[in-house]
Length: 173
Image (tube, rainbow, N blue to C red; front, side, top):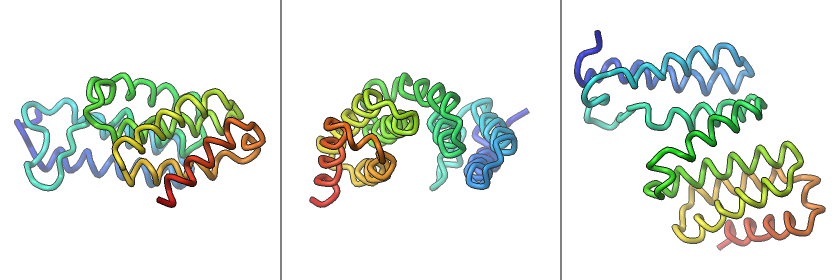
């Protein structure tokens, strides 16, 4: 049974989340999913699920992590499901964390780019761009710059080209 606030357990689950990212980078879906499932166990800890120090891994970002890893692996269906779930979480839906919301929106736009769906790119990318302007978040701007490189052939669509130009302008200011 997990002890209340056991920092060593939350660290173990954080390590599993980091391993999931490494496995995704290697293209190993099953190992990535096993690591994500292990990281998910942090939600079963009672009380404060972190050690109170620099590492505050409590599992609140796991849907975002899962979505990002699936996107990295090219599993767009799974990524979209996880990212949509993350977007509906209270902290992201209510706008308490603009940086995290912007990252999720950018990942959802990247899914649209890979599917060659300009409407999805514009909907999510446009909202992420507005957040980046409103908050002056360098992190969201960096994520959007990554999206910019994914636009490729979609840039023939005038609306997508305009979004790309706005991202470029954001990243050069």
